[in-house]
Image 1 (cartoon, each protein chain N blue to C red):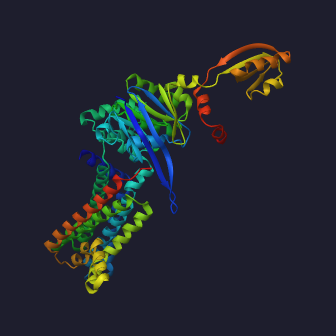
Image 2: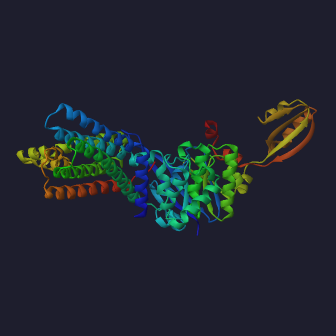
Length: 310
Length: 257
């Protein structure tokens, strides 16, 4: 049984005050995420990632279609007891201390009274906030609030964790810590569904990804499979400080360092490049295949006009 | 019900830490000070003025607090996204509304308690002892709490579908209209035909805050009929239940964008 399933899930908002008009935030979405998977939900800002998460959390209602989590409708309280959710840029009651906030959430999550204190201590320790558990949240930095957000999402030991842009606004150390935490959740067998527009995070963590753009699902699959479909590239390096016009006309990615120069070109342009180097009497040093990244795939999936617009 | 109690308790904690209570305790102390002044400039009606002034101030301050906290109960939680981490737990939307309502009513009851201490202290300072008629003050304070329950329910209802500013305008407007509810009913009795029916409908739909105002009666040491206490209690319970149920219904279908 998939952990998450959506069947033609769709959301259209009405915008405008006098002249109301529909704005489609999510086109019919059919998706299945298996248990124990780390699933990346990728897309540029405004792609519909947060809308999908809100639909799955029952915060907004679908215009059409439906979704099931752990085999049950999303608004079933039995589902809610087994999921954790970190919203994007979370804000918490700043008059509470971290410990008070987590105890409050533990009550709402029906954690047994005798276990609450122990759970709160354990989760504070896990996110590295045990020293500041008694400090009011208004005194917390953005990174610390993000950790509180993760703590509240995993406090009740959920089977499935939804994270909306968990690395957003964090410094490199904070991002690394969140990434490690997600790795450890994966080791515990939890299903993680996280949205991000930071592709390196997805590459480092995800078993599978889905790419969303303008509310539409563009691709879904294992990262290696997706990137293998990207047109291959090679790096050509030669001796000399000259970049021949025949090479420059093939690619914009030409670099010169001291007595060496290099260019990254499409695989099918390799012969033309080597010919151009020969004509200029330049000595070829190496030809190295360049592994396609998720970013390459991501850019390729957007139409040229959309790429230019970005 | 544990979840409702948890939300109510957190709402109470939020209000208390917002320093509202401290301002009101300050107000209660001011009341004691005012009674000293009144004692010096009036002869024979010091008690009447202190009770009138005190109860009116308790009522108005409490109403302002009820409206201004009440209108933000839902909208602030949506705006700051704190609601997202609540409703992604096994908490039903109606439980959230009920908890918020309970928490604010509890806050107002505690506020009223502290302000009432101020009034009783002022009354005691004037006479240096308590009289039997002072017990009527408790009934007036009970009616003031009923007003708070009613206005909190209305503020919550408005905040479930409109912006905080509009909610405040609606709630205050209804309070002002409601204080003239008896006049509206009198007017309705005099008009006939379709306008008469409309006036009657309007007179009975607006909350009857006039019936909950016994400040003048109590200030003149006159007793309050038990039937009025019963009628007002039932009226406020039913009216508030309808308003809170309306808030729940609207909130249940609302998209939290």
